[in-house]
Amino acid sequence: MLKEAQEETAEHIGFIRRLLTSETYLLREHLRRLDSDARHRRFGHDVSDDFINRYAARGGDFGNVTFGYFVDGEVRAVAELRPDILMHRDGAEVAFSVERPFVNRGIATQLMGRVIQTARNRGLRHLVLVCMPDNAKMQAIARHYGAELKVEDGSIVADIVPQEPDYQSWFSEILDERMTYLQSAIDMQRRVRGAAEL
Figure 1 (cartoon, rainbow, N blue to C red):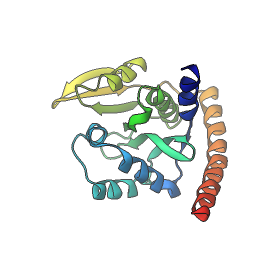
Figure 2: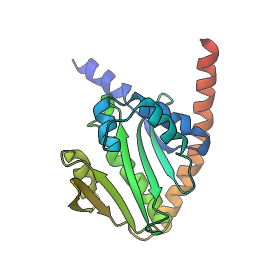
Figure 3: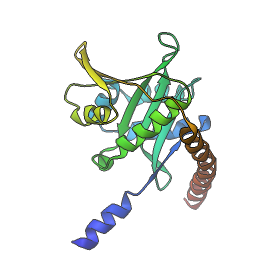
Figure 4: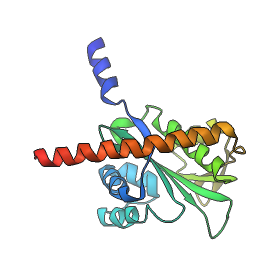
């Protein structure tokens, strides 16, 4: 029993890094693996594979920052930071998606921490998270980071106010960026090697 639990834990050990602009295909693959319930929670309505293909292609839009939770080179959870350039120059929308085998592992909480750090360093003063009323887990994560929650048009809207950037937040992001490029190169080698073995 203990051995099975250890194997299950080891199976789901991953890490978080930013997706590069050239890696929108990783976002697409992740979103397409979501079941219908997870897709509905992420987008607020049912979406097709074609919709996801078009959506993921815009993942590299100017100002967008996407973080992925990687396990064995595959993205299993995502946090997207999308600046609201038209409405609020100092605000951004945040969205999350987690594949079913990886829920209830604290991954979304970790992703939120990374998003907040990035928002701090970019001078964003408001992070807006919109979720369904029955999504208690995401509401709890928003509260964990000090969000104010309110009901708008049948959805729960959380407003998170990041702190001002400081030396530690800047330094952490610099280290994260160095690891992003290193790990991206490793992941690409793994994928190329895997494709060659097929």
